[in-house]
Length: 436
Image 1 (tube, one colour):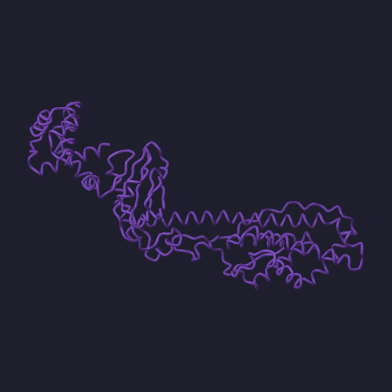
Image 2 (cartoon, rainbow, N blue to C red):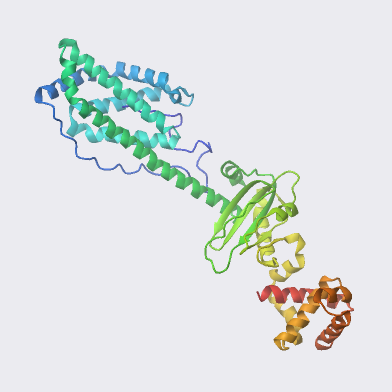
């Protein structure tokens, strides 16, 4: 039989403590619908007892201000939450009086006043949830108020008739059923608004992260991002792009990211991105070494950027690094894969280069073609050493040289010319990346 008002009674999320943002809102748009009342339990008390209850309740109507004072004092004494500085004492008294008045009148005229009393309790539960007030404290205060009312009924009934209090015992079940109904209403409203707020918080979180990654966030949104995501406007950031198995439409499970003091994930169908605030002394290369990429996935990591304003640029670079990633279960730092990144950034030109440099090789029989392509790739990895390439391919260095000469004859290129070697390297990357 009481409410509580926290200063600034509009629904908000205490953890954020800011006005509703442009990107999203935590505010509950409308009070959730109150469930229909259950049919009242008919009292087994006789007519005389019901009449006694009404007489004692009428006396209470005239003493509502004094009872309100007593209930508020007991609430503050017995429940620490009501002693908090955020509780407005004037609003608290007013709403306790409002709740008490409606509930007392509901005892007098159940049919006429029941819905109004239920609405007050429902509103209180919803408002307190929006304000983040503890539900246990709220229900405890309701029980305190109901105890005061019941004790006052007994005292009033005993004032003129010593046996009056004993007579009221026959309606005790009715009174406490009433209390139970209203405590249930308060709890249901509280949980319903809690679900709404949780959805709003999650949606708000998701929208802000997406705006940072997509580049649609404004500078005025950065304080909101810091409050909601814990990401400072100025900081050292990288973005991780993660891709799962192509056969699975679901977003891949985000791996653990070490080296970041704060990591915020955003998942989409088949992919995920993380905004990582780098810890002091940690580089993007350190993060890549510790990144646990799923066996069926792969990842791309952007270079370091400064501030939330550059997160969108980092996301685009991370996507490029992901496309340049050499294999499943691996992570590619863009800085280590610039040639491959150039290839995937312009697939049309890269495909044309691959055709120009490898066209005659690609027309060979598959077995012959694959041997020649593998030899060229290993020779480049061996820094142009035929001996080292032979060791890696388990063949003699002369065999490697013969294959290289064959490539020169087929393509008309010379592997002694640096320009042809650079173009060959890019062409092999294009063939591998654009055909996998």
